[in-house]
Length: 112
Length: 115
Image (cartoon, helix red, strand yellow):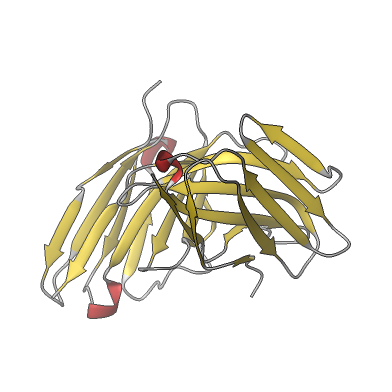
């Protein structure tokens, strides 16, 4: 399977703490994206990082990419109860028939 | 800007019955995707359209699933006949396809329950 694998599967933290989620993948990629999904809703794009980038920031989000280790991390700083959701990494690998492939997701619970 | 619109929101049917889902993508988005999401899993691509052409339908179970995107805008996904294992959330997404790396905009999905 080409899909990324997120780690941990579930994460529970207190409001105000930072949340770190990891994603590993197996093949070379063009880019990696992170999405959020609130319960019963569709996915919402958070951030995209290209294979030639190492770090990107967007508000309270920080994403890193290590292509040598085939891994990425998503850091949410100063978490809020509203950050409670499932988070998915999606990889767009290189080569023919490339398609955006999602991992199984991480369930983040932020306790007020 | 209106988002991706899907209907119905929920659908409950008995096995062997047909079912259809409808999607209206964001205006101007030439690429449309249908994903299936099982409980506790990530979305899995069923089919991807670029304008009217299905450019990737390798994961679509063609014996019972069909899709169309007339005039390169709205799309329908049909299952006939439905099986118990088809119970899932069916998500539609759209993007403006450039040279790759585009972000996808998702609808809220149709939750299908097959009894």
